[in-house]
Amino acid sequence: MWLNANGKELQWFLESATVYWEKNLPRPADDAVVVVEAFHQDIRVNLRNLAFANAIRRLRPARLIVLTGVEDQWRKTLWSGFDVNVVRQVSEAFAATEVIDVWDRIRRSDTPARDEATIVAYTDATYCRLAKVPRLPDGHRTRPDYRLRHAYATRLFDFYEELMRRDVVALVTSHVDYDQWGLAVESARRARIPVIHTQQTGCLKAYGLFPQADTGTGTFREELTRQIGAVFETQLWPRREELRAGAELVAWRAKVNLGRPSWWRGGVTASVDLSNPAERGRLRTHVVDRLGFDPARPLVTVFNHAVSDALGTNRELFPSLADWFADTAVHAAENTDAQWLFLDHPSQALYDSTGFFDSVAAKHRRAKHLAFRPSATLSKNALWSLTDLGVTVRGSVSNELPAYGIPVIQAGWSEWSSCGMSTVVEDQDAYWKTLEQSITAIRDSADLVSEEQVRRARLWLWLYRSGTDVVTPLVPQWEVWPADILFKTMRAAFRHIEADADPLFSSVERMWTRQEPILTRTDFRA
Image 1 (cartoon, rainbow, N blue to C red):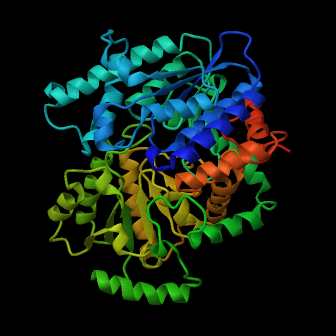
Image 2: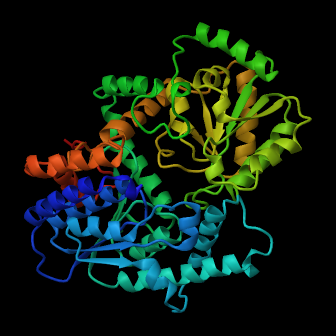
Image 3: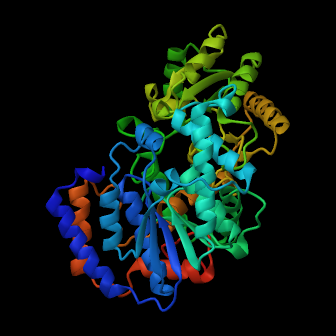
């Protein structure tokens, strides 16, 4: 994606950005630095990092260090169009003092490890992601490709540990998983450095983990889950009546697939136009007949994940996402009190090269009360009409389905799972018991979703899509694309819109000075 822009548009963009940031950043008076990563090949990701970093630099004058580069396996699996030189040009236009090709340094270093457990955890997750496998293969520790991955992780960790010993004001990163991002986050947390985690959706969205609020008892995502829940409970839920109209509007927009994200599907099949139980009932009869199911019996929908995605980065009940899915299928095969629909992730081809979903389906082909389907073969209309209970580990369906009265069980944590909209179980025994109890309750016509849970889920949709999405001309909405249009839009902002009271700067200042875990569009405490 870096190279899809017209050369002249890119150059004009770089010139206007250079002038803007030269005039709008104070000069640093000491050796303090803000560290920002630019490992992603999508320019929209890196622009969000750079914009947030510069907003911090307006509050705390500092130099900017940009980390970039691409390793061969990352290039082969994901970053085919990565161009370090373009990253360097863009970074320098945003007033970067130093741009470091991290992977170039790593390939030439041979420093020893310091924390084997941390290194192995990130090696394992990165190996699975880049190899697109759901689990580590047998004998993986002796495989040359795994040993190379481990050596890279060791060198990365040492590089980051040394870097974070400098006077670092903050680390700004688009990801907190895998070796090149996650190990930087680990090093920053150990050095008591604030970590800002930008998001790839909306205008400008970001989470923050500040040292004073970091208990050090869980992963970055675990800490964030608890802190987001606290903000939701103390600052949003007490204002639910005031925010109700906005929450209802956002719930409608999400229902018809307006706004982002709609992570797991897009297009016309992603909208829902069911408006009452009678319409749902008529469609349900048709859809369950297509699947060979009985419309009078409970139907549980199990949403598979991208099986190699960010393994072990939040609290999960099973050793891997694959173990959860396979074990749930075994349980379902033995539980004939319900019908079970297992859906694969629509982007699974980007995460699995082993045919994992098909292999699980093949093991249970004789179970008539189980069905396995690619998710794209069912529209949301069809899916929502037949689902009596949703099951996931951390998928976005766990906040979306409850907003429309469909209960969800989570076998792990997501960023919203402390906000009270889904049933989050704490161990495997509780997971199996909750499944069985929920199926029994559905058979008895009990309501598994309270009105409060529906309102909490809709309030979360408002928070995610509106309350924490900062609209600023300096960071165009994610859908402003392709690159030429993005550059023209940003060039207009740099050249023609004054910086005074720009929401980027005021929102970041509020988050930074209060050390809040979420960037917000408005002051929730007002």
